[in-house]
Image (cartoon, rainbow, N blue to C red):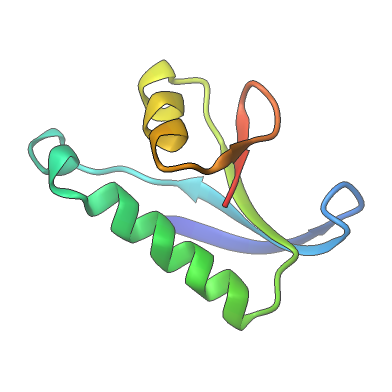
Length: 80
């Protein structure tokens, strides 16, 4: 996973942007994706980011994000 710190008006200040997240197919059902996203959210809390999120157009990714109760804030973005 790659995560960058940024600032945006829509986020109300500082935010973390997950720019890349890839888990090899054989590990996707092992909870690795959740652990990576949770680690990114934890980093955001430590850095006092107002939001941590990313973007995707992959329907499988959107489904995985939705299953973990993250809020979708547009068709291709999500917030943790």
